Image 1: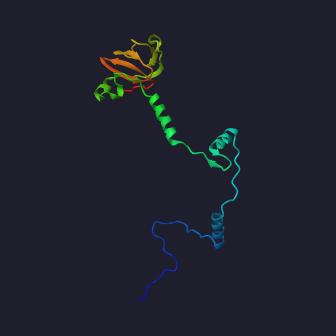
Image 2: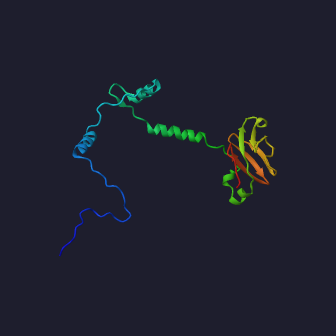
Image 3: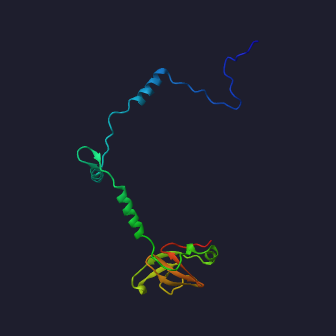
Length: 172
């Protein structure tokens, strides 16, 4: 049984890439040497005095050890900040908490500015490009009932709701 072996490899149909030339043994040795011997000297980086101060704060003593970071303290501080940033308690629900049917009936309100004062008569908001105080109306059928430190209480055709300060409502 005779088997014919072609002298050159037969390319696959539709494959017309150029053959890849292999590196010589000398070139392979040079590449291997580069990977096996990383540079011994760190590059010099210029830092400003603030960076140097931060670096000095991050290291302790002459041993060069880094200070330990108190993760529990950082988490505790972050939780306190979040609690302080929480919204004021109020019995009127936020617009987002209303049913979809009710939300669909409320017209668009662009909330552009929120100026709260402990003196209620000095508090104003800018809704739909109108500067308004308590009793004002940004759109027909809607009235401002109260301006809180972090939100505004609105009444639209008998439905009371809160809108968080500077958060517009766009009814598509």
